[in-house]
Length: 185
Image (cartoon, rainbow, N blue to C red; front, side, top):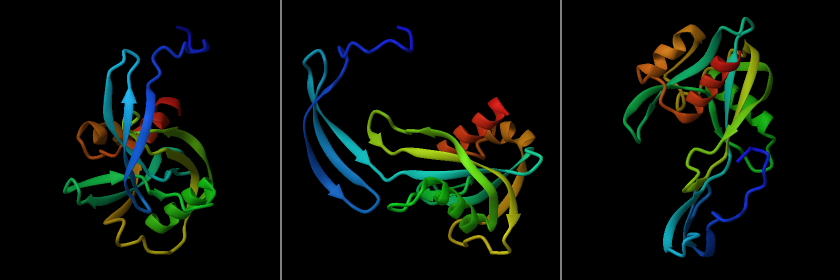
């Protein structure tokens, strides 16, 4: 089927109801009663989270990216990431991209624009992630948030492929954003 053709709806799943299990400020968990096109019924866990915004800041020469090195306690791993966080209610995503870059790195991008969006778990979760690219940056003199970054560094894009292959960058947003920039710059 060509990308521009209209779907036939033959493979659409039918949702017969959804029961809320837990609802917090950052996570909504429910169980949906689902019917597959072949008539099979089952229950599916569903996760909904607020939008998240990450900022991939490139220096003026477009050959270094601003990254943070931090510990992720859930996996008990240190990793390089892009600055980012949850979108506040009624906040413009571009403003969030700018805010998160400043809070987590102390650097203010001169401008930001949407690079791409993605959903990390399309079969289970609705958790839209927006990746903005920042063009150039100035040091605000503000220290990076100690709760967010052990270290802030301008990483040469030439080193990114090796860092990805070596498992130093494990987050989906960082991988997607960096691979996008490497593929299309």
